[in-house]
Each structure stands twice: as C-alpha cells, then as structure tokens.
Image (tube, rainbow, N blue to C red; front, side):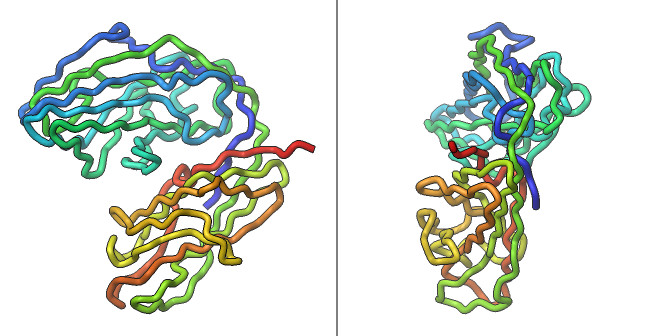
Length: 312
C-alpha cells in the first residue's frame, strides 16, 4: 500500500463549518421512536494557517455527544454536507475517529455534497458522553483558491436508538489556505512472516516496511492495524511494535478490538528522507492453531504520519 502525505499546503481556502440552514449557536430537535435523549454539540476545527494538498487526517468537525440518564444510546449513522465553492472531489475521504481509533470506513461526498458515515457498534452510555472527530483526506490535485467546509445535516441526519436527538451547532466563520504540495511519499509494504506461530509464545505476526523518498522524511504518531483473517480479538494479546533491532516503539496494547489494534509511537518515530525501515508487530499467541493472521492497513489514514524536512 502506498500513500502520500504533503509537506506544505496548496493554495486552497477552506471554510470551517458555517451552517447553511441554522445560524451559529442554534438548536435542532429530531424526534425518533427510541428511548432516551441524545445531544450532539457540533463545533468546527478552529484550524488556522495552511492545509496541504494531499494532506491526510485533517480535522474538520468535533462532535460532542451526551446521552440522558434514561437509556444507553447506539449511534449507527451520521450524515454530513459539504459547503463552500470548492469541488467536492477535493476531499477524497471522510471518517470518524475516537481517541485516534477510526470508527467508520472512509466515504466520499456524492455529487450533491452529501456523505453518510456509518459507525460500528458505537454506544453512548446513559448519563455518559463521548467525543468524535470528523477527519478528512484531501486530494493531491485539490483546487487552488477554493473553499471547503462541512456541516452536520439537521433532518434525519443522525440514526440512533434515542427517542430524541438534539443537534447544537456552534461554528464560526473561519477560512484557512494552502500552498502547492512539495511533500514526499511514504511507501508501506507488508512483508512475509513465519507461516506458523506457537501458542503461549511472543511471535512476530507482521513485518511492516516503510520507505521514504528523497523529498522529505516523515514523523509517525500512530498506526492502526487490522487482521484480515480469522484470528479474533483475544487470540492475540500484548501487542507492540519494535524495530528489527528489538527496540520497543509503542506501549503494549492488551488485545485487539474488532480485529484492530491502534498503537501510539512514544515518542513519535522519525523516518528520514531516502530511508527504509522494517517494523515488527509482536504479539503473544493466545488462540487456536486453526486461527489465521494477516495484518493490513484497512485505510491509508490508519497510519498517522506527517512529512518534515531537516534543517541543514
């Protein structure tokens, strides 16, 4: 899998969520046939400065969800809408995250500027709260001097088990621009591993080769890996990333969740320009010999990385 992250940004002007239906600090009530009440506070990204052409994981909206004390609330779908004069194709992917873990598959806007994000078993417990972030990946040829923003759809824009959904918009009129991208490319390749692993032992279950081109280095902050085979969450425990020399790069994750594991680099891991490194995913085998393992990046944005250039 190959993806490009850009270094500087590209002459685009993005307008952060200015609602076209509701004025700022207004409230919309949506009544459904469930139980309890769900309140969603929507705020824009408060970004300033530049956003690159080809940039990934750009923060577009924050959604603060809270449930009444009547019942737990399952949220399965959130609809958003593109605003601004820029082409909707400039934003190639949208997805929701919670604490760096992606909760939805990436989607693109349709020609009308609408996008539907479907969540996987996401619950707000009664009397509880949660915060989601809407992130976006931009095309490398996104239009110069265009405008982009995202708003939460009001009518039937949230599918949940709540009887009533209250949407509170709190967005500001803010723009930020970009410059042409001159960032480098980071190539990700999964190498072969031993075809057999033994129960109870700590084994290498993935080998990840990362190669930076000559344009720039890259700073890695986190990576989410998905097992595309039959091994379940508790079949692999105590997962961590190491260098090929055995240096540990991430805290230990106790297990997978929905066959995924998100690992945070502490501190951030640097790959220099023209450098290739191989990282090893280590895990203790806790499952049946009939289970299979095949890790992958399900989405390009599952690798949270940004380019940099060292000062000469």
